Image (cartoon, rainbow, N blue to C red; front, side, top):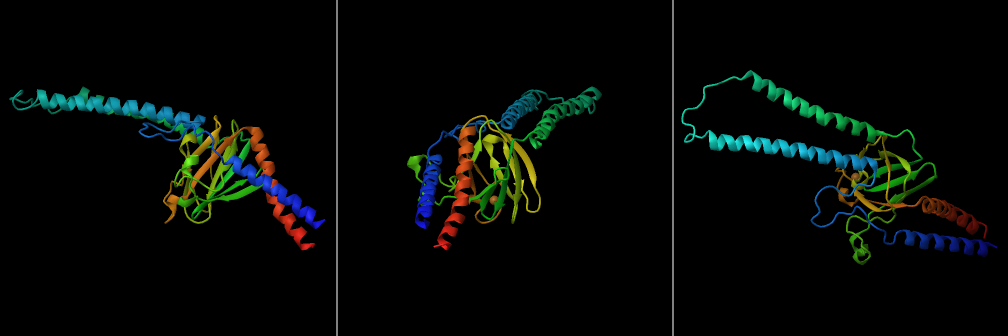
Length: 280
Ligand SMILES: [Cu+2]
């Protein structure tokens, strides 16, 4: 009997392991940076899209201001140098001009501030989360908890000698266990830490928030596209700060449910196996 129980659970654990291996096989990486790429990583959440658009808007504003200042400088250099303009003007004040160069920058700042605050409040939190992911920073690895699904695990960086570039793996960006999340689902993300400040960051999701020991920060994401996404700890947290990569596999809702079921089974298996061993 004991042998049968053990056999059953070894079968289950083999199935779980092979499923885990399958889940970590090559997936599309829609947002991975390309060589010589300009601009931000391809956004895959509404927040990341809004950050991208806001960044583009700011780039236009700063480009126009820079060109305007450059034009003024060139006019000064060529039209008002000593040779071209031997008798300089003695004007010291111009009321209209002074009002203009005070009011115009205020208008520009307001034009920047309104969408900036709108975005800040939009990305702050969601009231309609379908699930929660809790991200805990440790020196120097991440712990993930899925409170609704009652799953938790640690995710550690893969050392260089375990990186298989033939499989499309990247040095300092791979982890032994991936975060699995469902596509098209509003996910509340809670951030905290056990020791020092870390920052969980996925550029493609537009998520970057400090994991503070002793408090919980909150954000959210709804990922539009299935695939594998990479991130890194973005708060200097100690000597192994650069060894805290993040890998998120975004899968269909069905695959996510299947993964949840397997994880729960895997979590229960060792306890039952121990019991079986005790009863021998
Ligand atoms: Cu860190």
